[in-house]
Amino acid sequence: MTYYEATNLLKGIAAKGRVVGFDLVEVVPSADVQDMTSRLAARMVLNLVGAITHTGQID
Image (cartoon, rainbow, N blue to C red; front, top):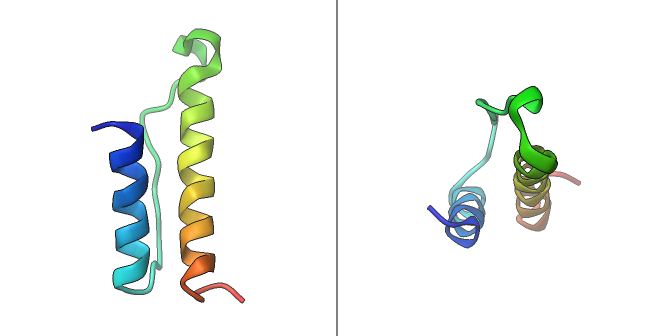
């Protein structure tokens, strides 16, 4: 799955209904090369927060 596919999936989930939880796993900072995985994880979380805000789930 590409970054854009995952982002679109999160947007679709937020548009479909209320998001009540989100869990991001398998990020190991000690094994992360140049913090790429940690940065990607942070972007995915921010994208989901933005998507649920855009759909009016967060005031």
